[in-house]
Image 1 (cartoon, rainbow, N blue to C red):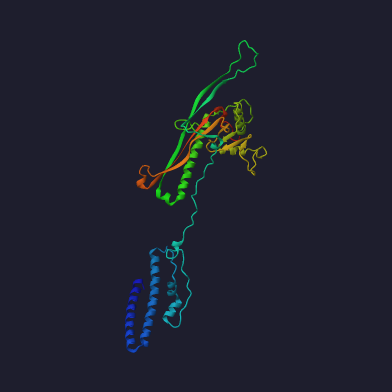
Image 2 (cartoon, one colour; image 1 turned 120 degrees about the horizontal axis):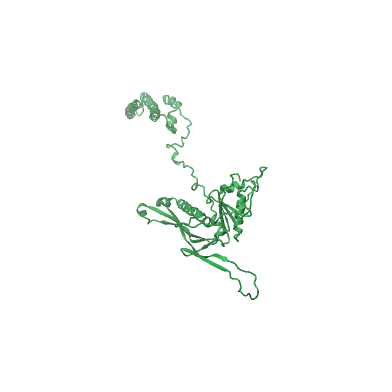
Length: 396
């Protein structure tokens, strides 16, 4: 029987039960009890009704499964469905004598018809951030503060030293030395960027605004590092240390089978011959790794120990590996002390939020702007030497 036929049979039995109920009511009024014939007829109809209801439910489930192509998972049976679908219940319904009992399972599952809506997926706290570069150039420098839009300073240009031993009263007078100066200046540069965000999102997820603030500040620091090291000085760009540094030139030391390590030592010497002490070496991580992996003829590491935590260093100077330096290039110089170079903070990195940018107010948007103002003064370009390893063999 299909579901429509089963429903029609149920309607018919319901009408018969109603008629039998009316007959029973008449007999009770007339004789104060039901006749055995009427009682048997009512029991039989109730049994048939239970069977048909169970069959109807099973048929509806099969039809729903066929309509979905059999792909939908079966819904867990409720307690009542488990009872009516039981063979023991069908046997009891045909002969309703005594007491019927059976154990049923609570149909609580993860489906939408059970406790599925209560299941909340686990969420990792915070936001998974991409890799962040370790910033180092700022830490090499001495920093001061300024309240102006530029830093002006006077640099010694030429010093002619004619000091010499002389008599007590020389006829031609004592020797004269000469010093000339030149004025120079470094403008305060503004580094800034901004992002658009929904006002509702920032209000509903306070953590998100802190995350955006941190990312904006990191973006400034990333550009600042590149500017301090290799800023071109053209337009609004800072003139970086590498840009102003003196080009490498071998001071005249003959080196057999020159390597990266040799060249860096010669560059340090070039700084020392200019009357400065170089305290730092800036390299790309690729070049520094190649130096660390240098081995002797018997395949032992030349100076690195893979099992120890050695700080990057070479020739008694600190090595600063940074991707702000291009692979194959190097810079050595007197970074500390403030005698050769100094950084200046005009305005620390800050984040401001505005509702009044363009049509933010009517669109419920906010603009988050992050900016800073910094300057760099290189007093003594000769205190820094820049060069490359291009003419060296790859294995050196």
